[in-house]
Image (cartoon, rainbow, N blue to C red; front, side, top):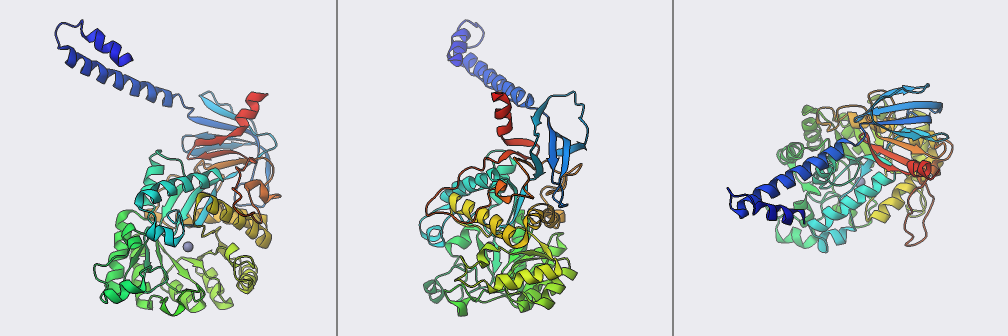
Length: 474
Ligand SMILES: [Zn+2]
């Protein structure tokens, strides 16, 4: 309507033809509306002041009462036990009775596994996967997860899109395509494909083409695949250093890498200033991987006492989805879980919160909330929260030169840390259900929003704030 008006106005300008005038005026109109949009965004408060809040800092099993926290830009600027005088334009959040804690970090996610393998292979194309993983990323953020380390799948585009502010979601530390040997656990070729092309050359299975995995054999191919991933911008790499024998499909066909192949992948990652994580189950595999310099073991369900000792001595991170080892999800057998728990209690390794969640928005929500419940039941609330905050933050820093978020620490509340924060109605150290932890789900029941997470801040920006609404209602 304004454009039409301007065009009519243009008819009265004698020098230019009306078409040209219209074009020029419309250009200025668009330019000025962009400018007013920018001005509006500029009016967005540069600071957030959280007042009268109790703090769980991600490191200590304690609450510091009645604190004041000032966030400026992307970082925490001041933490004080007295009121912070601040003159600028700030959003003030009265958090009396609430707890401020670091945003949660998931260390074993698969955002691109948006559906079952069968659906991914035969029913969905790249656009289904792209849109669905954006929805899944948003749901993780709204559950309080401000960072996800994705350990396999095409998620770099999603990461870039979230970082650009186009869609909401957590920070993503992407591993890119999982590096797996032919007939390894992450090689999804069918038997027909194998017999049709015995050399396997130029015959990429659909999911490999999409970037879920790279099927490689021998040191030379492993070097290329690892460098490809690093060149694409991954933060760390993930290799299939060990096969699982209990996947129930074709155990004999699930082959692991050879030690020299593992070493080649780990060396490329280390040389380029980051680290390798690996899917490993058994002591022999874990030992091979950590001897080669690997720093993050995924699953590790059958780890033994001497291996756990070595893991701790080398400062290796242990990323085990505990829910998968419970009686409910492991054919009624939880002996691996019991064994692991004893070793964790004995050696106190660097455990990170890990879900291995896959599937739809709802399925991933159920899995992460169950993992919170199961971990807290087995390890306690503090150990669970620490594994999802400060310890995981330490793991993210291992990406060193490849760390996409270098400005501050993640997973802690301290001066200079990234302002990735949650305000929770109550004390999560005393009650983990405030973060959505839940034992089980009725069939098809959709996970409801977690109303006890009152505020979510990521990168200094408010993602959710239902305290403000409460204040306004008063
Ligand atoms: Zn996984």
